[in-house]
Length: 124
Image 1 (tube, rainbow, N blue to C red):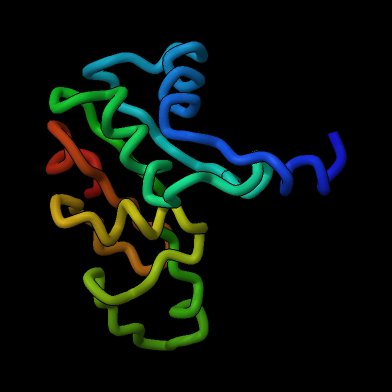
Image 2 (cartoon, one colour):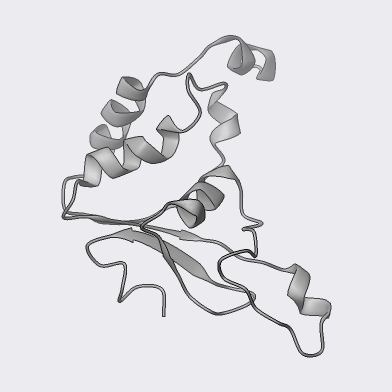
């Protein structure tokens, strides 16, 4: 498909949920997400990308994403602010970081954020 074809179609939440289940994501799973959602085209109601992942893994699962912040690499003594340092890894990782239940590790360069049952043990 050409890039213009991707931009002409929209993807709905049900299609994302179905696709995630089809590739083997199940309730109670722990999933590490690294994505480039722009390649599938516009999504109806943008937040559905994250909510679809949370729906599939359910309350017993965990969604984890890299929320790397590279801008501190130039600082000799970086001041890390996990609550306010934006993810430089894309829209989904930033949405996970901003989720009210998300926990984020303190690593300034290679931090992770997690939502769900195992969130406390994953982003160390």
